Image 1 (cartoon, rainbow, N blue to C red):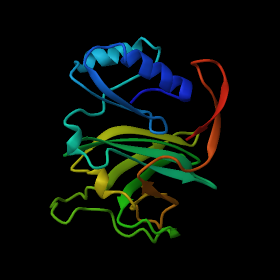
Image 2: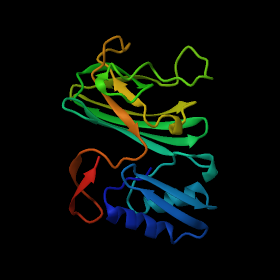
Image 3: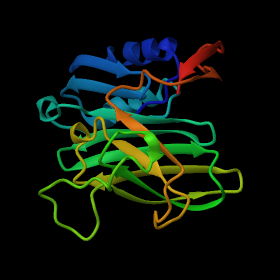
Image 4: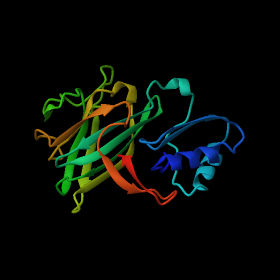
Length: 218
């Protein structure tokens, strides 16, 4: 993942990577801040080049591009009380990266999970049970994301990996947030998991690449 906020950032990243030998193709997913590179260079060489542009960058996965049908997805919480974005990226066939940022939560611990359905007609109540693949046997469902802890500023952040999670199987399902840690309440917010991040409200930000104020999809 690479810290990018506008098309100027995309151009800067591409121009830098194109100076490296061994790069065959570069794809940039600006909303998800993901750069996909096809080539034979060591990962460290590419990360060093990206850091030279003044941007934070970290590896979230590597391997054969034919291994992944869907490599990234997003769920956006659009209020009116809870706002946030959850991004999922496939690291390999057995592991996915999950990153989330929320605001508007009451201080304390909140359970959250990937649920079976993307039906939001009754909020989290209509999203079904916690998602679990039919062939997965364990005391804890694959879709159980554990606990988020919101501070006094009503914000919560999460960054981690989840085993046995395949992003391609999550499209159209949902992520639900709960008032309690054990998810015993009806839930307070839910969002559908989408293949792309081209949805939702825009937030005004200042891009560091040229100092121009832009409108960016969250």
